[in-house]
Image (cartoon, rainbow, N blue to C red; front, side, top):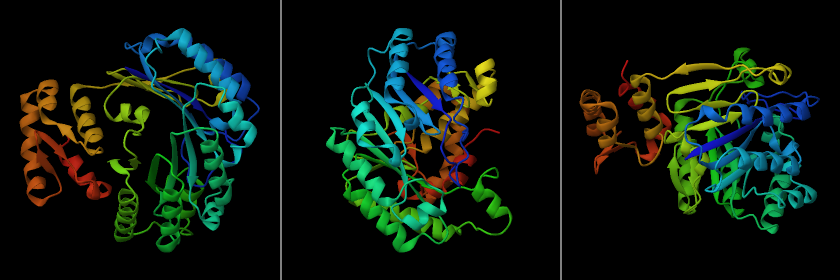
Length: 370
């Protein structure tokens, strides 16, 4: 079954770390949404699996769009695809958008999962990241959603921010756990050149935390969340039992998905494509860049995405899907990592211990076919 992703690239303000395709110009939002509706109908044939399992509204800031408009897109999706088996419909939201009125309108839609971009429960860190909300507003947003009956809420937090580790991170983790949410995504800060943080890094105003600090903060996140009963099932993701992110999990397991909107990516099992246009260009005529994955590409991607997850990769699937020669090469390369404990091999599966996932790039890259 496939996934359907709607990219809403509009934001009231731009966060200092964000490198996703987004714009602060809201004037073309309505026209863009109409163009997205037309694109969905026009590009329905890109994915061969017409049965949609998950729908996701990402961004940008999808909570800037009235819930009734999101429901209209869901209704059109139901007319365009087989959505009879849809299990999860997620919307990303900024905490300051989650007012009583917004939640009331959201409850009248089919959306059953909310992803809140909280990032921190420290007001100084939130200001530093140019977030629009306060820690108190974030807690209030979670409470409003819970009071309205939402029982599948995920929150994002960021760690690895110089000057905001230690007790600041500990307090953020304590408050995240205390809220009673079902899922937490914890991302290490990365510096991208086109972001405010990236420019500060280039000028020497900011610095990256060193590897020892990164590992210590990663360990603190894992310890706090797993001790609170969350399953660490992917390098950056933790879930209560039964609440893994189904849409994002489909990416890691090679499912097809259709991305709608400027900046959205799509994958049909063989071709990966994306639109990098600004909204005004997208409205006029969507254009796509694409790449066709070779068997080597697909094998490398299976290894990369599989080893990001706690279950790892099924070596029998590796053999059957990509051939005995590739299987033998991967197993030979894996031997030294198994011996060192960086890889585990059990029940015909290769996996990286979750406590080592943050520094697993060398392991994964060594298994790639070049």
